[in-house]
Image 1 (tube, rainbow, N blue to C red):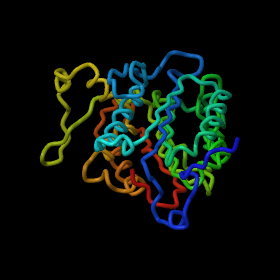
Image 2 (cartoon, one colour; image 1 turned 135 degrees about the vertical axis):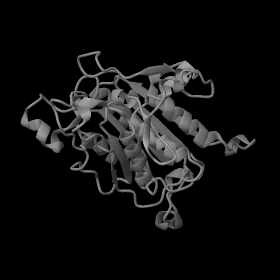
Image 3 (cartoon, rainbow, N blue to C red; image 1 turned 120 degrees about the horizontal axis):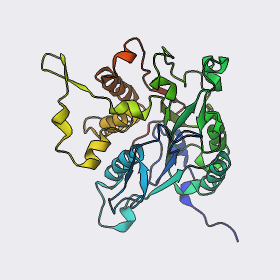
Length: 321
């Protein structure tokens, strides 16, 4: 039987030449790939929390706190102005894949590719760990050798991009990647003195309409105490009792990764939320830098450069969502 015609597979001449990506019905797909702990150990496991909001498509699941925070952001973003008519309701599909092997991830992308025609935009999230090889080996000095960990092994981020290129229905549509890959060597600053952003030599396909925002700052470091600033912009230690009155969930949310905090802080701000997402990336990096600068990492990090998240983009149009 011939496949039914789907208007969302067809681009008009106006849409093709438009400076703005098409989002006719806010049909978006949100995908999370999560690794609960590094390969071969339960040490430095991600913090998790159960989703207790019935409106969430992740209701009842125990998820990484970074997923929890993003989930709330997307629900607020796409469902804050729902019309009574069901046809006008944004169609957001959320899927989460926890502790998948590399082969299983490949299978997921095959399925995503088959259904890609149903959506206008895609948000891919990777909450995992950076594979940096054995300490002291030359592999640590070459960014091209860095890979993301999955359940059984690590693969280059380029491998994921190749899977995206194999999905023709994703062509000319924005694909946003938020990558939080904890570099655990940063937890031993006296051994490794300086951190280098790992995406600066990363190749991204030039025809992929991709935006990648990546951070390697471990989630653990995000829970270090913060300094707030006085009216004269002088840093002061944040009172420890500040979070005492919060619920357990609210307190744990304060510990989500620095990148995630920066993204949602900017994109939820009413001043910036209606801007194109790429236009907001300098603000996101600036917010991350502000969080880094006001975090008390401890004496071990006195001469240690905490890397600001990095951005790479091949978007060819503005993307408003």
